[in-house]
Image (cartoon, rainbow, N blue to C red; front, side, top):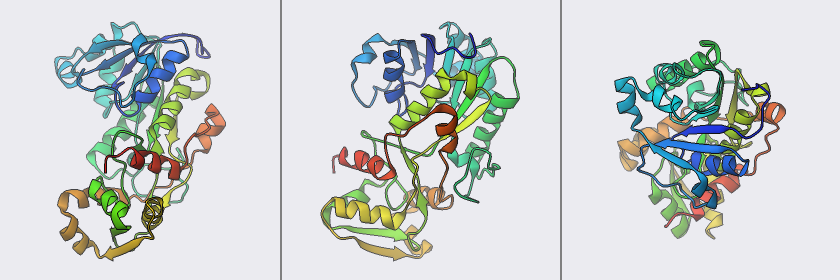
Length: 315
């Protein structure tokens, strides 16, 4: 396709019924595109939209198809002019996807976690990667392959932070997914935080992540070969987040701070592990590139993002 084309296209979205796809797919339909969603067929979108009636759904178990070496061909058989891959985690997955493709524009979802711990903030897309885990290293290698290691397609990568929105629990002020933290804040404003509660969290509304994907997809003239952060423009400390929610529920915050070992003993290893992953990174990323290159304007602030998620919870 023409590299400056923004007209109607046949677009295949892999993993299109999750957090990002819930908002991305309907927006692509409203733009006039023909959209095919490849998924396991086990999940409905998080919100209803009349646009879903115009979407073609095809079922494919990605891991099984990849093991059989047929996933890329399955996607190519949908005859896409552009592909959005929301579930790619390694260069091997990306290579198998691209092998049967030819000259499409591909937008893949990366992760801000692939940057590792915060260094000089706000961190930009050019900040050197210092991945902490095998999953993070896979995302780094996937990005490197798509943007600089192949010539079959043009490609862009979008790096979201803590994707949030109505329909699922956002990362809470303690830095994990324990819904009990929200219940406690709603009941009387009380919360237990690790250390001094000064680590940063940076949520992003799924609708804004979807919009960055949409703009990268429909502006290949400026997005090809580039990566883009997708975050709220602000970060928030854990204690400020707890204060926001306590007052939202009509209370003054009652914060209790624990040394790390005591925090782990109180909340349990599972929740503490998630907390550690967030507070050790303490992220604050810049959205300047998406704004300047793609013309992206976020709809949701940090505070609006977390409140929209919390208000939708049954707590």
